[in-house]
Image (cartoon, rainbow, N blue to C red; front, side, top):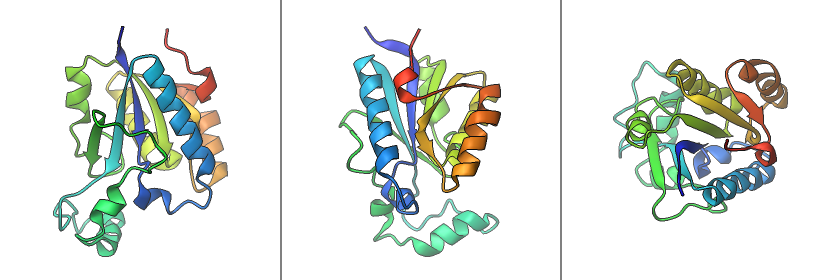
Length: 185
C-alpha cells in the first residue's frame, strides 16, 4: 500500500552546497534515516537540488547570490556541484527536481509533480534551515500543503538561527518533529 498523499522533500543535500558546512555527518545520517523511514512507509521521496543548464543561462545579473555562484561554476564542475551526497540513498527511480532559486518551488516542476501524484502532505529535510527549508515551508504553506519539518534532518551554518526557526517560527505553520517522531496518520 502506497502512502499517496505524503512526500519527503530532501532538499539541497548536494555536494556543492554541503561542502560549505563544517559538520555534515549528523545531518547526512538523519536525512538518510528519514529517507529509510519514508521508504518503509511507502512515502514518495523527492530530491530537490539547485541545478542549472550548462553555462547557467537561468542566472539573472540582478540576483547577487546566484551571480556569485555562476562565477564559481563552470560547465566542467557543474555536475559535481549538483551531485547528491553519495551517503544519501538515491535510487534509480527516485524523483530529482532541479530548482533555480532558494525555494524548492522556484523555477522547478515540483508543484506539477505534487499535483500529479495528489500529494497534500510534505515533510521537509535539508540544508539550510534559513534557506531552502524556510523558503519552501513559507511557499508550501501559502499553497495549502500540510507540513512537517524534520528538525534533526535540517541544519544551518548558524545553530542560533536554526534553533530560532525550529522553535519559534516553523511551529506556526508546520508540525516540527525529530525523524524518530515522524508519524504518518
